[in-house]
Image 1 (cartoon, each protein chain N blue to C red):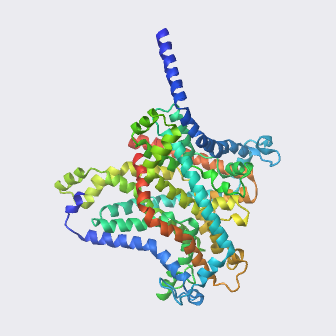
Image 2 (image 1 turned 180 degrees about the vertical axis):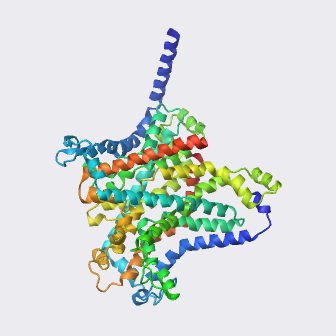
Image 3 (image 1 turned 45 degrees about the horizontal axis):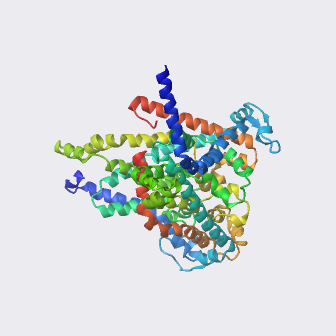
Length: 290
Length: 312
């Protein structure tokens, strides 16, 4: 870029300083809560914990890991995330492939119908009634099927598929390959970047599921981790821990809450660095083409 | 006109031949089609219960029509006007706070020369986008806690008194805005950075030869170049003026601030699903969808009139 030839000015110093503050502001809440999760209860309650643990202990985490309710929710959420993401990515690919074909008869009408759903919806209540009448309440499918395709992700994938040379599919068709064969053996292997991106988007979406679990799930065995975390941290003092742990008497409540927040966040933090390069590329495909 | 009819016939025929040729592609589309019909278009039809007195035993079709009765009740309800006011107020403030923030951050990032520094900052600011609102609200409530939170610890060590951020209505609105900026500002820069990287470097060279300083280059090259992108983001925000997703106000809110934190989505959840007043809640939901759609179309029309471009 041409600006590189500028002499270094005070502006650059201020800019770097500002951006450092912004980046720090993104991380500090997580450092603080991590410090809380490792601190002794008395130090937390007297307001002595900043960014470093005071009176180091692991009871907060031990309480979380020993809680049957939290572990049950963890197992169910892992199951939901794997099953749900597989369904999402597969069905999105099934939609993106035919719709990326420029001469498909009716493509325009179908596409406009799909885009229309981005700007107009029937609202929560009619959707709830559909899910209920299909008998999906209290099943994992209530958390998966209503969000099978995120239209934005469908746009990303269709855009990516449109960029794959049509001649590849054509020559396979000449050799007698079926459409599903072309999709599986030619298109999908060429599309790992977009599949990685959508796996991340959908996967994080399932891991974060709260509202759908709140409205569709009554059975505590199918509570998601986010729902359990919400009960723990935002229900009234003492009441939340009782709901989750069955009692709250000898529990270091503050470090348990902080520990539970970090426990729920940890998988995202661990996966983030590996997936980062994919999602930026994926998001760019969408924004450039839109 | 036999020739014309013939041409039309062959056109229809070739279209039909294409459909037959692509029959397997339509088969692949079937589950996609089923999804959009069942979970988008059936609910759009299901919204007719807003004009009925829904009775769970009679079903959607068997329930009695009541015309606009549910909307009349809605417009006479004080509670509805409070949630309407809160929804619009929080969104309008966001247009001044959360909308420009990613643009400013993107412009600052764009001026950074050290690539490694730029990439590190980008990586960090993208992260909060991937945290759930449950986690973000948990982090915010912890950091702002009057007894143990980092912010109040600092205020006290400077000799001040603890501030009850989450239960004070004015502070709460500020925290609500800030939480949105914290979570999405980094992610929001992606679209602007893409637009910035697509600008022609020759324009900058020319501007520099003409002696333009940094500010003049920003004003005369950069901003005009990314105006279409800014416009799209702005139109989408305007089109959502009636929408606040459920999680943020519900999770940050508490009984002390309900008269500013209660919005349409939390209201629909409460009257519809907790009080099982389906028809009335569906009417409120429909009002929301229609107003959003009208705002989007109006903003788009205005944008087309004034700038000659819009979303569609």
